[in-house]
Structures are given as structure tokens and as C-alpha cells.
Image 1 (cartoon, helix red, strand yellow):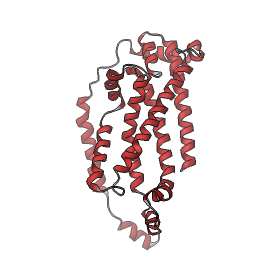
Image 2 (cartoon, one colour):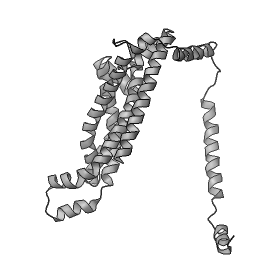
Image 3 (cartoon, rainbow, N blue to C red):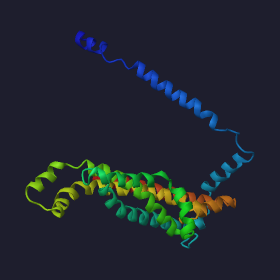
Image 4 (cartoon, rainbow, N blue to C red):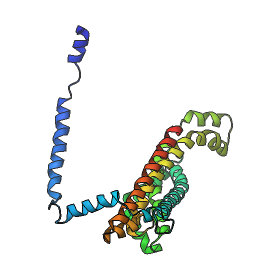
Length: 267
């Protein structure tokens, strides 16, 4: 090896102490966490249930899988997509003004912290908790799912929008300002062109997340494919559960593939 390269390699910053320190912290947290997780083994008929679920997936109820009635998988899949889309759209519309009012390069710090605090509060609760609360307000059904996803979407979309807005190229804004453009013109020609691609990519990504969340919210009665899946499993109708799981698997795979493709085109 070249002596100069060898010298540089020998004089490289030693990170062994930092690595050992971080490793000890991880091991310590792991050891402290273990006592809080009780393991009582698998229940008596646990493996039988696992086997029944697998058999239901391998031998689903084809009538449920292809029937076009409200109890069929196609209808439930489209209902789940509709809930996810409307929740994302409403959350997106409400997130845009909140994001601008929370950005320090748009408004002063005296006011931006208010929007940041609102976003943090919204992000505190998971969708399942919002679903449990809103189902007491608007009752069970798809509308509750839309409300839940709209609120939770505001938290994530607003936060990501704020990061994009604060990374704006201020040189373009200053150039438009120097050329005598008014506020509307600066937003039209300086801000929107920089934001559209990122805004669209974030919105599509949130829709992908909401498709999965809409399936989970069905477990609390907020519409979608989750509730029929829960009822099928509770009633030991494994063939029906298998058909619903196939619908869910196909839905998630298709949405993720389309989402990744569109976002890669936008980036």
C-alpha cells in the first residue's frame, strides 16, 4: 500500500468508543424493555387457527371473492379506495393553508408556532383512536372513515408540506420581488412551480397509507373491508376471510405499485 495512503488510514478518526457507547445504550434499552413484554406462549388452539387462516387463503370462497353485491370483495375494495381517496383529498385541501401558516419563511415566527403546535397535536393520536372517537359522533359507516383519514392526513401532509415550503429557493422569490411582482404573481410564478411536484408526490404517498388505514378502520366500524374481515374471523368463516384477505392483498399491491411508479415520474 502507498505509504501516504497508509499514513492517512492510520491517522483516521477512531470511532470505536462511539460505536461501543451506542451499542451499550441499545443493549441497555433492550434489556430494560424485555420485562414489560409478557410472553405466555401460544394459546391451546393457536396453531389450529393459523392453519385455518392459511387454508382459507389457499381455498377462498370464490363466490364472495367475485360477487358484485355489497357483501362481495369488489364492492368492499372499491369502498375502501373511496374512503381513502376522499379522506386524502379533504386532508390535502385543509393541509395547504395550515402548511403555509406554519412555515417560518412565509409568516413570522410569532405566528408560525401556532400552526406547528396544531400539527403536532393532530399527529399525537393514531387513526384508530380518532376512529373510536368519531364513531361516537357520526356513527358507524364510511363517512366516519373519511373524517378519520382526513384529520390524520392533515397531520402528516401539513408537516411534510412545511418542510418543502421552508426549502424553497428564495432567490427566485427575491428576483420576482425585484421585478415588481405582487404577492399573487410571486405565488403563481415563484412558489407554486417549485412546490407542485413535491406536493403531488406527498399526496400520492399519503393516499397509499390511507388505503391501508381504511382497511384497519373497518375494525372499529368505520367502513371498508376491515369490518367484514373481522366478522368472518370471529364467526370462524375461514373461506370468507381468505377471500377478503385476497382482496386486501391485491388492493395493497396494486396501489403500492401505481404509487411508486407515479412518484418516480414526479421526482
